[in-house]
Structure formats: C-alpha cells, structure tokens
Amino acid sequence: MGGLALLGALALGALNASGDLKQEDTFTDKPESVSAMQTLARAYPEQGSQPITIMARTANADAVLRVTQGHDGIVRAERGRSGEGWTEISAFAKDAPESAGEVSTIKGLRSELATTDGGKALVGGASAEQIDLEKTNADDRKVVIPLVMLAVLLILIALLRSLIASVMLVAAVVTVLGAATGLGGLLFEPVFDLKGIDPGLPLITFVFLVALGVDHGIFLMHRMREEAIKGASTPQAALTALHTTGGVIASAGLVLAATFAVLPTMPMAMMLELGFIIAVGVLLDTFLVRTYLVTSASLLLDRWIWWPGKLFRRQAPWPAPAPTPERTAEPVG
Image (cartoon, rainbow, N blue to C red; front, side, top):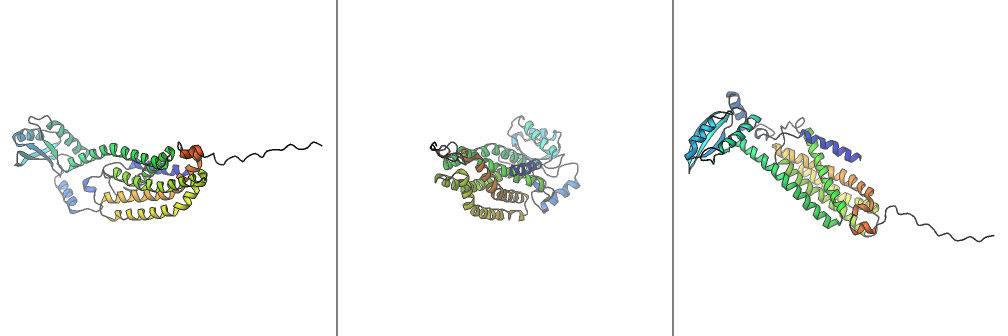
C-alpha cells in the first residue's frame, strides 16, 4: 500500500506536464534560427514573425488572397510563386507563432478557405504543421495504446495461463508510466527549464516502458510459475522467483537506465524528456514494482494469482491447515 501510494502521488505530477512544446523551445540552448525569429518579433511587434503558407489553385488564387486578407487574424498577405497550377500565398498573423491566437487564426482560415469558390486551398507552414502533428499524435494514442495493451495482455495470458497475473503486470507497467511521467512533469520546467512536453513523447515513452517493464515481469512471473508447477505454494514460488531472478532484473534495469540517461546530454528537449522518463521508469519498475509490489501482490493473492488456470484449481490456500491427528479411544479403568 505504501508503494502504491508513492506511485500514485508521483503520478499526480502528470497534471503539471501540460502544454505542447513549441518549435522555438525544442532545443535546450538557443540556436541562431530562434534568435533570429525573436529579433524579428521585437522589430515588428504588430505582426507574427513566422509566415503562414497557403497553397491555392492558380485559377482561384485571387479569391483565396481576398479571403485571407479579410480575415481578422491576418495583418497582411501577399501572392508569391506560381507553378504547375498552384500559387503560394504568404500571410502574417497578428499573434506570435504557435500562440493560442495564431492557432485560432489558422483553424479559422482553414474553415473559411474550405468554402471558397474553386476550393482546394491548403493552409500550411510551421505552426500549421505543429497543429497537425499534435492532432495526429492524439489520434494515434487513442488507437496504438489500446492495441499495444491488448496485444501484451493476450501474450501474457498465453504464457502464464492466468488472467489475474497478466492484468497485474499490465497494470504495474501503466502505474510506472504514470509515476515517471508525473515526476517529469514536476521537474521539467522548474529544474530543466523546459517549456512544455513534446507531442510525440507520451506515445514513445508508453511503447518503450511497456516493452521493458513487461519483459522484466515475464522473467519474474514465469519463474514463479515454474516453481508453482513443481509443487511450491504461491508465496514460496514468489519468494524463490524473486531470489533467483532479482540479480538479473536489477542488472538489466541498471544497464537500461544508464543507457537512456545518456539521452539528456543531447541539446534537444525531446531527448531530455524521453531519456529522463524512461530511465526513471525503468528504475521504479526494477527496484520498486518488481521487487516489492508484484511480489507482495502475489503473496496477498495467493493461489488467486493463477486464476482461472490449472494452478489455481490445483493449489490449496496457503498456509494449508495442519491435518488433525486421529484420536484413539482410551481404555476405561
């Protein structure tokens, strides 16, 4: 219960891991491109420093240009290059790049230009790409995460012949992911001076930690099952499995954590966030979840850990009641 309380408290820090990382904040130091954009913003405070690129059919370019110039969020727009039936239009928003105001302007332009005569006008540019990237990652999370969890659960059920043990291992991985992400949310801005979370980070960290965490869980639970098949009670099998696999799991966890801990040395916010969350997650999984929580849960669940497999039906509750010796009639007198 103490371990679950600790992981739950850490997971609350994920509420602070909000806000998508802007392009200008993707480096841990300030490159020349970001300095140049900030210089433009100071010199021209009345308009955005990054153009919104609109691709329109050449035959319809004048209509698209008029709609763009008449949009409330656009300061100015001008016609650019033409070729192969397309014309480029560069527009500058009133608001700073990737701000809430510019995002609203881009979405508004897309909505208005979708109904312009001739149609097929495409609103792009760096800010629009970020909007599309965030939406794509959000859609991917809704599909990929459930599919990965279902696939892992089915593999564990086939290997361990137990629904309870399989669900427990998947739940343990999700708990570790939440705690590691929460700790990152508490430290990224105040300690590492990062301005948000990369849109692709949740999905990537989920896939990595599920693969690594379930891998360690299989080492422990499969050895536990082998001991139970030999006739050991569930608590005895759990302690034996912990004793025999603990060194391997601890060594693998330290190596993996040290490997991912190298990523924060790269001058990119995405690499820092990825390396930190996975390294912390692997350490939590190795030294808290596998060593204490999974083993403790196995002791508490006893034979129910194997439900509904044969081991559940074969094992008696632990400790088994001692047989009552038969009493023999004492001679009278």
